[in-house]
Amino acid sequence: MSSSPSPSARVGRLAVVAVGLCWLAVLFDGLDMFIYGSVLPHMLAEKALGLTPDKAGDLGSYATFGMLVGALTAGTVADRIGRRKLMVACVALFSLASALCATAGSVAVFGLGRTLAGIGLGGLLPTAISMVSDYAPRGRGALTIGMLMTAHHAGGILSAYVALWVVEPLGWRAAFWFCVLPLLFVPVLVRFLPESLSFLVAKGRTDQARALAGRYEVELPAAPAEKQAAGDRWNALANLFRGGEWTQTLLYWLASFGGLLLVYGVATWLPTLMRSEGYNLGSALTFVVLFNLGGIVGMLVAGRASDRFGAPRISAIWFALTAAGVFLLSVHMPPALTFTVVFLTGVFLNSAQTMIYATVSIGSRPENRATAVGWTSGMGRFGAVFGPWLGGQLLAANNGDWGFTAFALAGLSSMVFIGIAALRGSKRTASTGSGQELVGAH
Figure 1 (cartoon, rainbow, N blue to C red):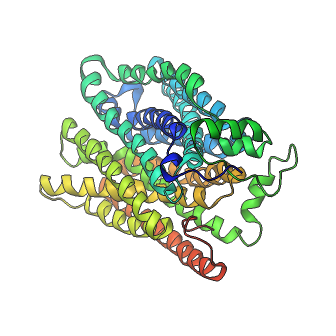
Figure 2 (figure 1 turned 120 degrees about the horizontal axis):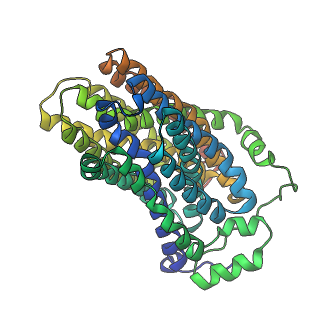
């Protein structure tokens, strides 16, 4: 292990390059994720591809099902071939899939495009989180992950403006052609994105990792205590359940299920639900902007608070506040108050889920980190699949207000699960005397 550099050296050039490139990749991820919800009111209004609310909910679930597949496989694949290669492949996949959506002549082809895009989107996010965790300054892991996730919401804001400025004059297909542009970013990733240091160390490529760490003035991760047997792809997953870890793992999975049901249900249906409340398309898209601006603020605030008080505790409080905000959206309020509630809901909702990832990532061994984050995200994707479908069914039955109530209940359930996990984590920390550097480690 290399000698510890000074605090300023810990934020070296490699950290800036790696986090910056990951930030841009996640920006495109957010654009592709939110673009469907942003153009959906327009597609429903003109009955594009024969779309109805229940079919639209199904299409939203196709994308999140693809994200489930991508997230479940990303950790295992990244731990085997490297996070750099997987990130490049994911960006290329969801960009090309957007071209399929743009040229689709039927709901089936459009659904195939969204499913393929979802695989790329689901694989990218946990891989990027694992990548930046390698380069985060000591004691600032949750904050660094929060900064990365601001890109996801910046992409959501961009999607609203694409829908506002591109769809009206050129049609909904132009929005998906716009989402093909990240393909131009692939050569940049290939050229400049470094490989994960913990991946190199875990694979025994210590000399290469040491040279890279020395050149860019970052710490070299410790070698894993035990090397996984060659070809044992399930060993990393089994480690999540060994030594009494299974209870904590299941609690995080359940919390992630409710959190992602809430995140993707709201992301898919917020503009349409607000339009059903009497707002015009421009105002409905303003809610998307405010929601994602809140998400950016929330990531920065939650990251700093989690580094100080523990990610599980902050996540539980944030989920409780989210449930209150989502429920209030079903109540008719003056426009200014509605705008405020949407912004605050964005502050708490998005960062509550991300702090679950932060807890798992920071508390995992380097060689097992991508698998732990990927499976936590992946199991939560079952909720992400269910959320858009549920919103579509409620809207088709003219029960849009119940959509907000259902999403609020999902937030309360996540608060309970992550709260129990926080209490268990506190007891284990007290009994083992573990340091604060593992925020809420399980």
